[in-house]
Image 1 (tube, rainbow, N blue to C red):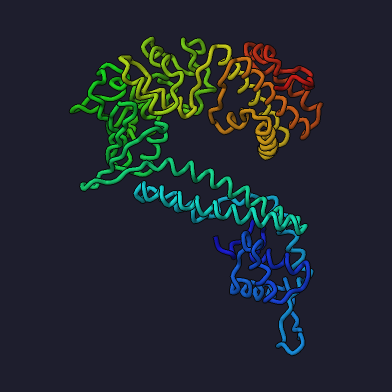
Image 2: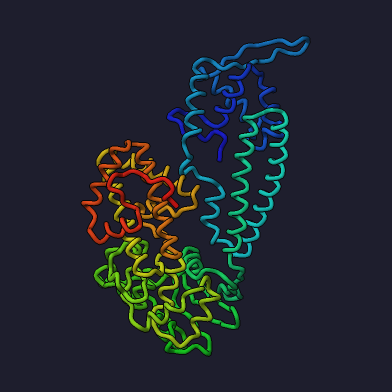
Length: 503
């Protein structure tokens, strides 16, 4: 990012401008002193600006009336120009500091992000090596920054300590991210025909499909785990087929998911319920539709996969999968899913002579789009959705969407501190959220989360508003769901929190 990239103010002030105004607000300095200060070990770790950049910025600030300059003689040395901040420059500094502390930089291009977006253009081994080298460089920066923070603390430089601690937090987070990222680059090489051939040991199946789709890869991805071998076939990122292992039962779950053509399970397009032709390119929705219509056909074009948790479809479906009406064969397949975490576990299950939705449901389950639950937990999930949507509608009427966003952000923060799933954000942004665990544990989790929601709404609007909305919700939500909310001590007619009930 350029040193002259504007920060998030309405005025054109860059990072180097802000840095220089702050230094000159403390005391007048000549140009050489500014350059030397910025080159100091502790400062250069987070505010590294070159000499040319500094002097160009000083000239610009002087021209704009943000700084003033006078010449000063020191003994026999030549005159030197000493810079001071003007009242206008000081006002701009205060506004810019306040804005930069508050706002989050959104969408500013970062060279690493751009490179990461196009990393599929590199050979996977090269990409992985480069990422690992970056991680090693970050480790070196962590060591240097930690040492500088110790020096700043010992010198009583509290602002400098805060900056370096913030820098350390960012560096640690990036180091963790890079190490996880490196594992996603499949170690592979192209053969003499230029076909990608790779071996995958253990990885999430849905991640493999998405990565190959986004990379536009052509070739065969060989899976060899626990003695089970097969190949996924891709062309330009589209999943075009699967070469089965020799001993696989042609009546197994894989056979029900792929058409057999020339010894391989292959399909290129599928027809949706509305008659649209969808390419099979690793997108789970297409795989779902192509393999079997396990969802009500009338709903296929009305929903996104991440809305499954909120659907009131056949609540009493045997087997307890929200939103699915399953056959006995599919239930037998899904009954084997407990304990499946990655493609290695999946490989073992696919060898079993079972028909049904195993290979269809696994990507959805692995991505968190469906959860297995009993009827009681399904009803609790639907009641929670109705409860939170009711609150959101009430707040929109009084304060508008921006107030909803502000309250929800505070709820997200508090829920994170309490280690609770962020149910409201999941509902509002149409994401899946986990209701995993025993129903009593989920009940406590939901109850604790709703207490946080209540507290933050009360903080914004007061207890009277909370009480009136709570009473309205009891009248508005359907009776069966109200019974569920009362059963789990979530809905209170008076809107008053009971101490000690949150989990």
